[in-house]
Image (cartoon, rainbow over the protein chains, first blue to last red):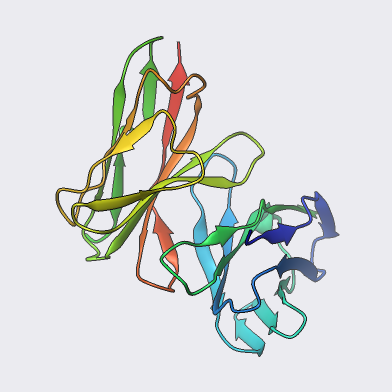
Length: 111
Length: 111
């Protein structure tokens, strides 16, 4: 069974520091990887997508993909209280339309 | 205005009653999905559809039904057979191997 694993947290990070969120996946043939942010009571919103090994940067966010080790991570630089949310990792194994979801990591940025 | 519209935002169901949640999109996406999210939990796939007049069961389809008569619409019916329907229901759309985009969600409560 295809799985995506995340540490449920909560992960507490001081304001201004780097928050590091990790995700591992079981299907070695997976092709597409996504990070979503979900505020309490709201729907998930896409913040990063990554398709090839290495780093992808967008503003304060960096996604890192290592297919050999089957993990994908999200770094948030200069963390702000508004970054406090649950971060969901999603992986597309490439065989059909389904995304495989992790359970999410709750991030708390302390002022 | 492009996007995914879910209605209603809040819905109350009496015991033994069927209710239908609406999901409409104008993004011209092929795939549509229904997810259920319980408090503090991740997303669980109920049903998904890749093309009109075709849909597949997800991990927790029992007690739910769907239809896909138009590309733009994918309504979900929560039947009386679903014994614990109180949850946050999320509709999403997307393309093959690509990311999913979410509506604002419907919060269903049994009264």
